[in-house]
Length: 381
Image 1 (spheres, rainbow, N blue to C red):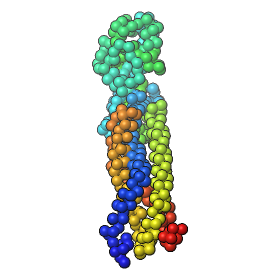
Image 2 (cartoon, rainbow, N blue to C red; image 1 turned 30 degrees about the vertical axis):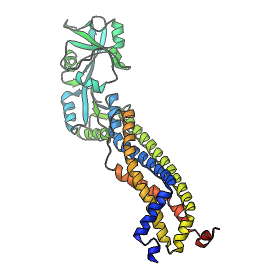
Image 3 (tube, one colour; image 1 turned 45 degrees about the vertical axis):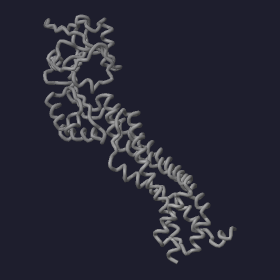
Image 4 (cartoon, helix red, strand yellow; image 1 turned 180 degrees about the vertical axis):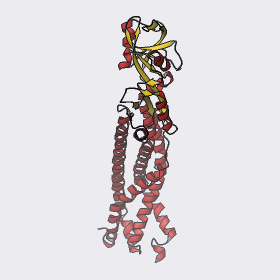
């Protein structure tokens, strides 16, 4: 009797492949549903695990996200800024500059000077819209950049000169190399080399504050601020909320949306597979009844159905991983203009979820197969 039922391995696999071949159209529906589910999970997981880095890079294009200052006397020493920067792990700070503000007198009116490290401004203030050219070297004392509003008030254009005058008669002239439109207070300032500003304003070795661009893909900004407070309790160190604090909120919202999309797709895939399997079981009721009549146990029937769906799921998962990788790259290029790196956890997650969907989908169809009344079905009732 053993050779007439599913305990015979050769007969078992013959029945498996025969069932898959004869019900090919419905099998392809199941395969497509599981492939789409696996592809979506692959793409969403790939972006999920890589989005911290990509989003952090994207948000860092908005400029400085970390502030350092002295709330007590209004100034912070250059040496202190250097010590704070030395506290940061390698690669944490991508750009930094002290800022010194002060009032100076030009030939026309008083102006506000802003002394900076010019080479950091591309990263700390990428939103500056500049007419003319940027200044990219810190030691340039011949050229300056001027805010759009101040330039308009003084009737200055790119290439013109502006002369600063001290009370003792000392003068210094700058060529206007660029006109800045920033949409903030910078529009009313004359932006000069930090060393010059310190010397002209008699603030040698001092700055009003410092701003950094800090990586925050893993919450480093908050940890860095805590470290600074421990080492320098008198300093004010915090995230610039408009950039850094919003980063975590944006990431959480995007991750939540991706998770919701993946769940909806998986639910739909489960329903599709479940419905198709129920239809297949209905069409194969005579086959299962005959197997029972020949001595197949309920365990044999369960084993056959589960093996069939697992075979489909394994192949579909492989195809879904490939399609999901392609979809992830499309999302990466569309949203971040960058390649999405597939992290190691993606693969076990996709395999586990795909197999779980397949096994959940097979529960009701299997129960229906087991409830088939052999005598009634074989009689044609």
